[in-house]
Length: 145
Length: 145
Length: 145
Image 1 (tube, rainbow over the protein chains, first blue to last red):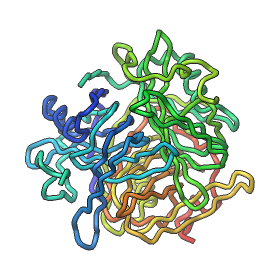
Image 2: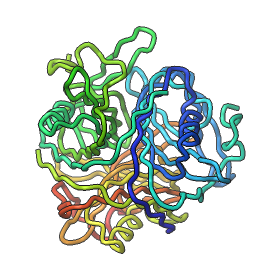
Image 3: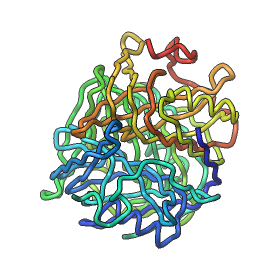
Image 4: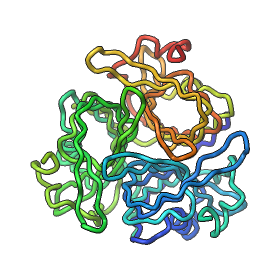
């Protein structure tokens, strides 16, 4: 087990506008504020989700597009540093008109209707990302393909 | 993107009694402690859920009642100020005996079996609510209809 | 309503190795660092889930095993003290290749593929656990049966 320890920093609540790309918006905030370590939660609603499931045997993500208006009933993740740039890792769950759910790892291409994102900054050494990154995830073009 | 920034304040863990109304209980706590900005998480179990999905075209919530004993496997949201009164915005996911799930925006009328609610107070200017509010949500009568 | 209030303490991000038992790993961390009050969130992926639903009438948990590779799209809970030992209470939601979900209370026997666990320490009196505990939950043998 690796352990990274921090002191609590500022908390930011972001209100994202209709049409925003969820993942890109959080990354832009992290870049503009030089956030190098944070935990993140979010709730709201979306117009479209681009989510992924990690194939542990193949070592790659499989993507699913949900072209639907859904509540985001749960959203959480982290901001770390990867190759000297903020890296945002988010997972979320979505619910429809009947309360039925879908969920997964958030790709670029998830489009906001309304969203409140809570970013809890962590004070200490940068949180250098230690996990598995899809080749395209660090570029703006990733995830919507 | 609007950004509201805060310093971390006290954290309160609330244990709600069997039969409590989830949303009303958190609002009563916020009123009694004058909490004007907070992030919230919660897990536990319920006897009945009154949840909603937002129809983005019609601009209104549609409600679903779940008359069932379910785990609350995920719960999160915020406390802000709306018309000088604490406004509690919660979303949650529920699971049944087989682990199947339902989820949505929490209305009044969601009845607790057991619940631990974590309220992270945020220090700074009040978080003035900026989102979409169902007409009935700020009254005690709302959401259970 | 019982209320336990704290000041914010350190935040630890744990990266759990492949094959780790989720619940046991968090408890081992809490014991090694003497964490007696904390809120916890986590996301990642698992190879196997051992989850439960609480039967409110019978007063006991029913268990479900998911022998599948799934994303953990939501994970949250708390660390409290029970009989002078850290007690870890976690609930989580899982998603598969199509984004379909299952969820519940986490038992021992939930096996990690990759997991980032955020432990927010709370400063104050220990959080003495006040809830319902399955007989086996405080032992290493519990939950995988």
